[in-house]
Image: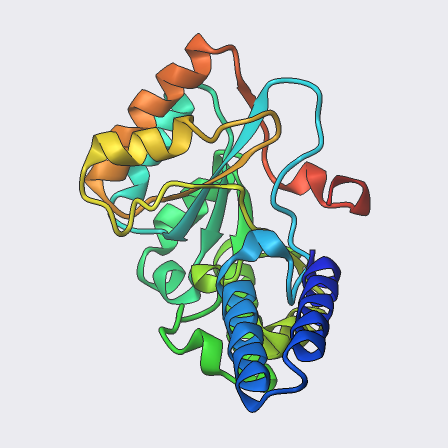
Amino acid sequence: MKHYLFILFYLFCNVLIYVFHGSLWVYLFCFLLFSSVVIWGSFDITLGYFVNSIIRKRTKIKEVALTFDDGPTEFTPKFLDLLKENQIKATFFCIGKQVETYPEIFKRIIAEGHTIGNHTFSHSDNTGFLSASKMAEEIQKCDEILFKTGNIKTDLYRPPFGVTNPNIARAIKRTHKVSIGWNVRSLDTVIQDEKRIYRNVVRNIKKGSIILLHDTSEKTYNVLKDLLLFLKDKSYSTFTVDPINDKKTK
């Protein structure tokens, strides 16, 4: 996707420069357009602009991955109860600080057979502005806590907010991680209406979808209950992200 955007941008700007004879305003417009493309690429993980992230599984069967970010939290046990009741395994991208706060819940996630991913130590609001070394530290510190608390290692990493840039790309490479994105975003951290969150998910589900949710609120728990009914009604099975961790699935 990145290469196609560059090619389109290059061709478009050259046409403008030719038609308008290299006007200063054309160069300014091209610069602003390029900046917009870069910003778009930074915030939309599905584009793979800076980092090639796995955003879905190539499959011919009706199956999806349920992934939960930002835990563990005080709400996580309810999510685990519901998943256990429905015999479903999910993928939890955990924040190091949260694991320190809720170590027993983290151990339960592992004990019940769910897959663990790294979601940095602090999930800093300044993630997009950190240097490559600071970003690598965030990932490594989370790794240390995951191992210390749950005796577990993971090569799965999900960028906070889905933000990527050259520094984050270098940090992922240094820490030997595989970036895991999504192609179905619930927006459950910004939308309050449970019905809207639910619609955001079900209208975009396709074979092999990776669904982004957060085990951080009662509303998402309620959405999950309805979502599991939907998946059962539509004969969807579920998978965890780890089995698709290879180049054939990107």
